[in-house]
Amino acid sequence: MSGRVQYPIVFGAFLLAWAALCFWAGMGFVLVASLLLLAGLVPVSLYAGHRFVNRWYVVAELAALVVAVVVSIVTGFVVAGILFAVVLGIDVLVCSALVLTRGRGSFRNVTRNLLVFLATLGVATGAAAITAAVAPIPSCGSATVGLGGATSTSSAEAGDCFVAAAENCTPMTLAVHETAVDELASHEYRIVADSDSRCHFTDAVTYGPPSDPRQHAVSYNCPALTDQIGSPGEQQVQLTQCSGSTGSGAAAPVIPINAYVPLATASPSPG
Image 1 (cartoon, helix red, strand yellow):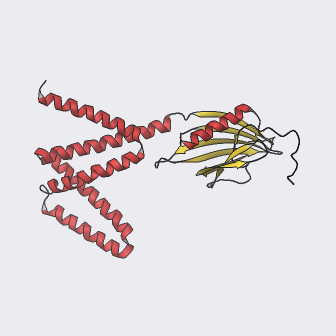
Image 2 (tube, rainbow, N blue to C red):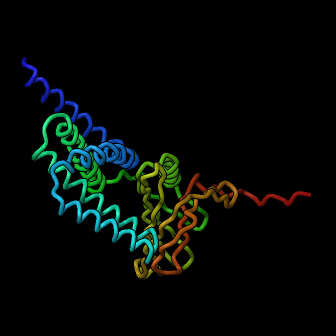
């Protein structure tokens, strides 16, 4: 097999491995990889690409930099930084295109490979995001909660499943049906993985009187779970620091843990 045939095969295999790594590694890896690839692409493309630009392009670059300086004086460095990033991004794209169309040798090869790696990273990451959005989220099942806590062993096991998944930030759902004195509520809990290897929790609730249990709807966005020890034999885990609710009056978002077993008789007070 000739060297010209071997190179595309080896490069194609490496590209497939790179795409698979980008697909599974997550947003943290994507961000770091993008910064490293851009750190290599920007100086190479600008150095090689400016050999092919005419003086009017250089004049436009200088004018854009002057505008960025003026904007930084008038509005502050944040807006100027965005403007400078846009100018630099356009410059890199133009110079990369010039290197690919007019360049030769190692500069052209390096620029092409870096752009291919960046494009593959973007495609693989987009595929991972689409897959995550379309794929069904596993469920721990459902639980029922009465006035005394979880009403069955299966309810407690479903709650245990959800909390165990939360400890590892594994996407999971849990349905909880809660019965109060004059109100019924249905919770749909969900673990949402964040890009920093952490997670947050959402709770979509419908509630109302027994005659119309879906009369109201409310949603919560909560960053934490907190252990709450309730009645003897009962342990519950509650979503905390919640925000973003669209209503008020819903039952508090509580996940049953360990089936509630009431004491046969009240324990006497110590002393």
